Amino acid sequence: MTTAKDLFIIAMDPKHSVGQGDLSLALAGAELIDLIGAGAVAVDADRIVPGESPAPGDRFVGEAAAGLTRQAPFERIDDWLWRRGRDLSAAYQAALEESGELRPRRGGRLSFGSERVEPADTPARRRATERRQEREPVLAALASAVGIDDERPDDGTTGLDDEAVTTVVAAVHDAVMELEAVRQRRTIENAAFANIWRGP
Image (cartoon, rainbow, N blue to C red; front, side):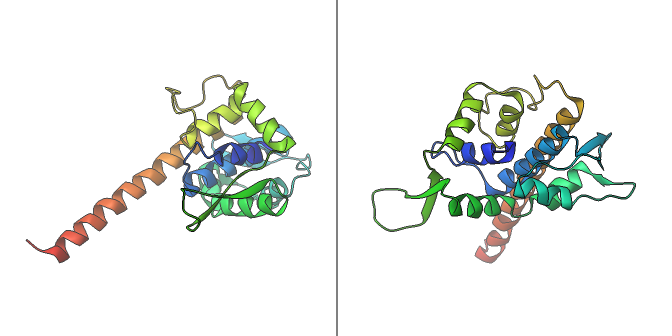
């Protein structure tokens, strides 16, 4: 399993409510961190520089590596998060449902309604849970970015001892905050538009 899959499994816990957009950005960051760990990329200031080492043998991380810009000036981390993160949580959900890592569940007491999923009791879920319980710094930082373990008072980078990883985690936090600002702006605009039609 990868950091991104561990994060996704944690986020699917029924106790949490994580937005798909936020999670997609964090998953893209987790993939990038795994690529850094494998030596497949390096970070130069705010740019992603492809390395010589192969990507880990995970389908999604491999796709992330294949999509890297390989010519200077290379891609900015924040631009890559938005591009790679587009609909990424839905892709992870589909793949994990297909592999049996997620199972359907229904909310509420009624027998109808929107179907949701939750992690199945698998070795992958136990591993992800153990990493979270051990407060593994990278996973904890990414979970914090999407509102899990949000008691962390900082931007999630405390405890990280790798400068490149710290840069990526900070970029994920910034991207999630930017997405929230967009949501709030749309809510205000929609409310204002509704008031125009409602009239005095």
